[in-house]
Length: 108
Image (cartoon, rainbow, N blue to C red; front, side, top):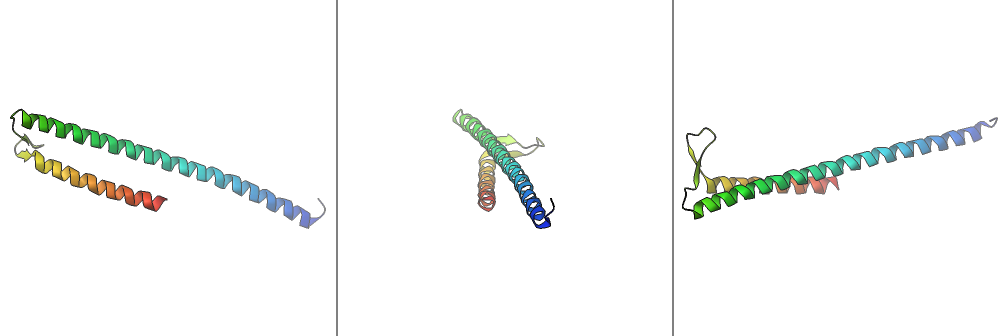
């Protein structure tokens, strides 16, 4: 090319195309990772909820069968009140839901 103005135009256009393609790939990858993270977080929350409900159901069944509603703590030395433990877990779930909603509202 003998005309430097024409050459600058084509170089600029090529740069814009390459930058556009790379930004598209980067944005697609970022959205893919975000979607994967969201799906994993939902699955972990679902598993956590299932486990909590399963334990609550076992405790309710034990209470209906006339068994004690206390269990031994992790050290095995001190009994723990199941209702207090359930209340603490509910509070933690509420906190996690609040944090998850904050995260989702800031990532949109």
